[in-house]
Length: 328
Length: 164
Ligand SMILES: NC(=O)c1ccc[n+]([C@@H]2O[C@H](COP(=O)([O-])OP(=O)(O)OC[C@H]3O[C@@H](n4cnc5c(N)ncnc54)[C@H](OP(=O)(O)O)[C@@H]3O)[C@@H](O)[C@H]2O)c1
Image 1 (cartoon, rainbow over the protein chains, first blue to last red):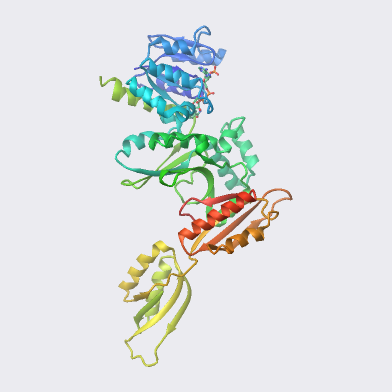
Image 2: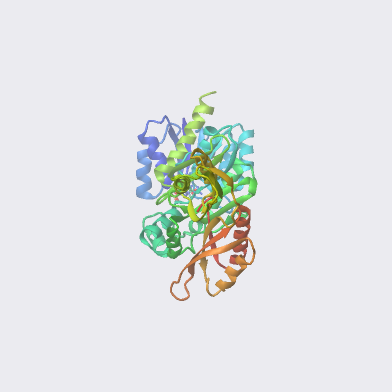
């Protein structure tokens, strides 16, 4: 199956590497970064492009654009992995809309468009008779959406809570283990590449809240936006507070929580018993889903990273291929 | 709770052991023997104990298999405990008032207070343990504490429901 990809950063390169080194039956026929693009209906030589990107910073020809890639028509699925804009969703929102309008399936890791326009995009996909999948937007490699849609089909989902931000989880782990101050732990997370230069989105709980918005709208159709989430970050936590929690045989984690029945949509630091399944270490993510038949189901795994996010994208692509493309 | 058991050696131990087995905390035992009772008659024993609400049913079951009858379970008050952590300028925003407002609400009592004093002007952290008679009242007491905290610009870190 042929894929066109917009974005050739950490996630895009992870996908390209997996496609070129594993026998997945996928071919990349078009690719764009912010300043160039390459289109080849016979399949792009990925090793070539990776090297060119490394050496020149461009993946292709500066005269070709992302829009040309979308309009090229030489693909079955558009993979959209450009940077997230949580306010406008652009340029990804426009890219996704155009691909759907031309009858192409879309797979994205981009939280912006999905959090802002879930209903409209899904309706558009349905009326074009194509799929829009977004597993990678929430909890990276954890197959959460797949589990909710397929694995737990037939269950009533009563709520969920979990650790949705690996950066915060890393900081809290280090503050607990080593007694580091918040700013020391943040500095360390930055040096290790776990935190962005501007860590505001992560540490203020906004990233976790965006993921809750996606889940609230997609699982329960709550039609909420970021302003509906009650958000408290970890940036005013003290090492003393973690030590006090320790006295209770507990610790503190940044927990995102949705309980539709009680209208709870909240991100906040919470006290949890140390042996609670959501008390995961370092950059891990974890989610507990509460269901009527299956009871509580907890999924734990890596919430970010080049290969890990590629894993979620590829599983969405293969799902589309196996269920929608090759069936016809 | 009030128990009824056979007046013979070893019976009291048989009643107490299951309590500690489920993690209960025995606070007092009142053992009244009727001087006129004949050997083999039953005696009444009152035990004051603290156990998690969820363990109560299995405890009553175990006691029964030991030949101990539970005559009455007193709905003792203030059995539910919840600890929260506060961060901010806790002293400067009148800690006594914060505690008073919980205590005087009739919803819960501040049972414990642990505080860490950091460097001057740095926010301090405190652990407050509340005791309440029911989950409903505890919930309202925590709502109240949350409001007081907002007013005083303190951060409240609450347990994830059901813990600790
Ligand atoms: N990294 C993770 O672990 C992770 C996990 C889950 C979700 N995500 C999401 O996945 C997406 C990609 O993340 P990333 O870490 O790969 O980001 P990244 O390393 O910053 O890469 C972004 C890529 O998009 C390209 N790009 C920027 N603007 C573009 C435009 N207008 N048109 C076409 N391409 C454009 C960039 O081009 P240049 O190369 O020319 O700069 C770059 O190749 C983001 O939305 C992110 O939130 C990431």
